[in-house]
Length: 161
Image (cartoon, rainbow, N blue to C red; front, top):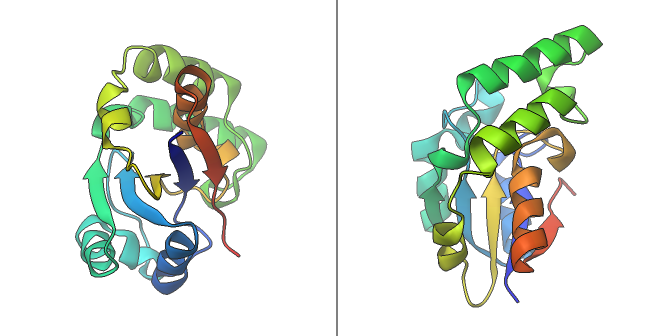
C-alpha cells in the first residue's frame, strides 16, 4: 500500500518543515499550488526555487502538479467566503462548500491521477504540498481523499509539531 501525506507552509519555518518531512519519511514532495510563491519574509523559504534547493539538500524529490491546483477564479471564490466569515487566509479552518463542489467538478473529477500514483515511492512517503496549515482548509485534502477512496492510498496529514 502506498503512503501519502499532506503538508502546508503555514506554521513552519524552513528548518521545521524539513524536519517534519524527515520524521514522516517523505521522499517526494508533490506541489499542488498554482503559484509557487508565498508572500512575506517568514515564508520566503517556501518559494519554489528556494524550496526545491532545500529539498534537494535533504534528499527529497520534487514534482509540480499544476493541473491539480485551483484556478484563480476558484481561489477568489474561497477568499470571498473567508471575507464573509471574517476569517484570514492563514487562519481558515475549512473550505467553503461551493469551493469544494466546484474544485471537485472542475479540477479533480477530470484530472488523471495515474501520473501521481505512478510517482508514489515504493518505500517512504510522498507528500501533497500547498500553503494552508490545516488540510481541511486546503484542496490538498480533497486530492488525498480521492486517492484514498479510489486507490487505497493511506493518508496522514502532517502539521507543525
